[in-house]
Amino acid sequence: MRAIEITQPGKPEVLQLCERPVPVPKAGEVLVKVHAAGINRPDVLQRLGKYPVPPGASDLPGLEVAGEIVGGDFAAAGFARGDMVCALVQGGGYAEYCTAPVEQCLPIPAGLSPLEAASLPETFFTVWSNVFDRARLSPGETLLVQGGSSGIGVTAIQLAAALGHRVFATAGTDEKCRACEALGAERGINYRSEDFAAVVKASTGGKGVDVILDMVGGDYLPREIDCLADDGRIALIALLGGARAEIDMGQVLRRRLTISGSTLRPRPVAFKAAIARSLRERVWPLFGQGTLKPVIYRSFPLAQAAEAHALMESSTHVGKIVLEVAGH
Image (cartoon, rainbow, N blue to C red; front, side, top):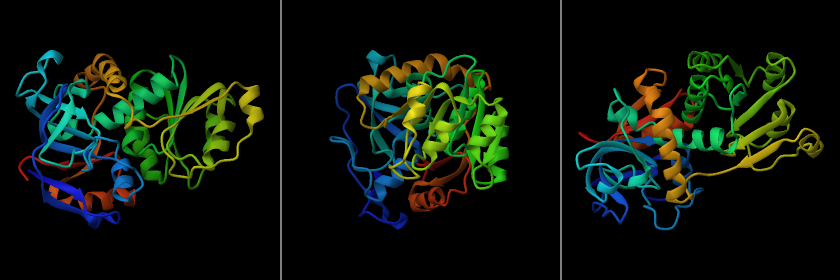
């Protein structure tokens, strides 16, 4: 099969087309003939040599795919050969075939193409796990999404708004802020020209938000604490702004604040299977109703993975970038 491998740590050009054996599914796994694969920030970090591959995972990049089940251990999970699915995987997505734990597979939502479905698993698993499971965003509560125009961001905005929450989002340009508002954010905040903490407090009558989804870290943390409501929670999922912060622990104590962090990739299949069940029950029907939609900025043929990574690193996109695999 054709695949994209990381020839050495470095710039996008180190992503090269290669030939690899078709992977063999283990017990509890299916073999997917990949139609499309989503691109995510962890893929970029892996390419740079900053995100070690978990033991036993493919060295090929790619954490989410959509395509056709063509083999493996699928019957017990209610799937059949030929079913079209999207799946969260530990690696190997940038290829014509990929193995996936069957419990991390979901049917392609009604009305969506494989290209659209390939943009869903990584962000929806991440957002559901962090915003709704870990941070317990509850009815009547408000959410601030840092990086609202990213793949994670557009998912968090849409999903929280669809479930009835007030949502605020930060982005780096006025155009991106308007895009966030079009997806359901009450207010897009340009972090280059506005103080997000001040805007959030003004918009909530001084109360602040209940939950913050943060992929920045660094010097954002003290400002986030300032604009959290009492009993507020920060869910930290990435450290684009750095791994160190100086924070006022007195506020954490007095106002009963919670700061938690998590990464999804190393978690066991059983943990991700529970998320998949929640998504299938609570979220997937919203696509059929038109309440949720994939937000794809651009797609590239598999052989142009380097160009796709360069676009992601430019941060000019709104939403997801996807590789087209089948037919290329």
